[in-house]
Amino acid sequence: MRVATTRSLQEARCRSDRHRASARQGAQRGDQRLRVGGTAGEPVVARGDQGPGVGEQRPAGVGQGEARDAGVRALVHLSGADAAEDSPLPWAHAIWQIDEQVRASGLAYTLVRPSGFMTNLESSAPAIRRGFLPQTMGRGVIPWIDTADIARVAAHVLHGATHDGAEHLVTGPELLDGRGVARSLSAGLDRTVRYVHLPSRAFAGLLRANGVPAWQAEGLRQQFGRVARHGLDGIDVQTDEVERLTGRPARALADWARSRRATLLG
Image 1 (cartoon, rainbow, N blue to C red):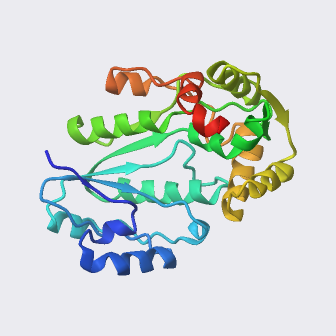
Image 2 (image 1 turned 90 degrees about the horizontal axis):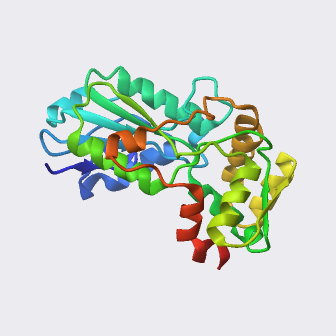
Image 3 (image 1 turned 90 degrees about the vertical axis):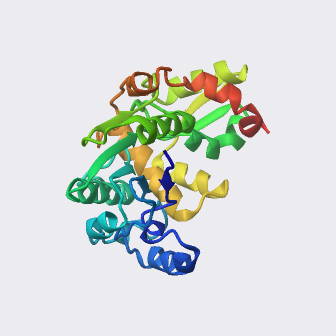
């Protein structure tokens, strides 16, 4: 089965080259309406963007009429484990809104809801090279997931699922706090990495110094210093969905760090 994919909900408005410019303009305006163009019978993957204007987005409803006219039989939304109506994170609230649109669309659908990405740790690579993991999550825990495992689940869902409204919470195999992450990095990189707890604003400042955009540094400050530290938005729930769906267990953080040695250590 041929699969139609889109880079974002905004670009899902039309996949033809003729309309890509207007799709990008829609993204800049915060236009979240889903207008699907694709091959008849294909499930369509939608993913909401995380950008500087994400907190100002005003979803206008999934275009189920356009989807049906295009012959789309199902929607697959790459959501987030922390998607929540009352989340302090603008992107988590925006993703929740998109989830609600998909649920109300009248189309068959599947939601894939991944937990915190291991790749978020790469922004701390300069400090990791010096043997430190500066973080602000304290004793809060996250079931960190490798993005390759998310891709495996998405491929399974696209090619084998029945799209009956399932909502897959996909996570890594371990609930790790900041010190647990440091231990896993130490094991994977074969060198000692120590956790250093920072006040959340100092953490954001360090991210900015490492080249992270201001909007993202502030979002990560809230994500780790508030949501993760206090276990909000269901961020501290671990499942075996990756193994159940794909037949292979999710990758452990130590193994991921070993595979990303060149990136983390330079």
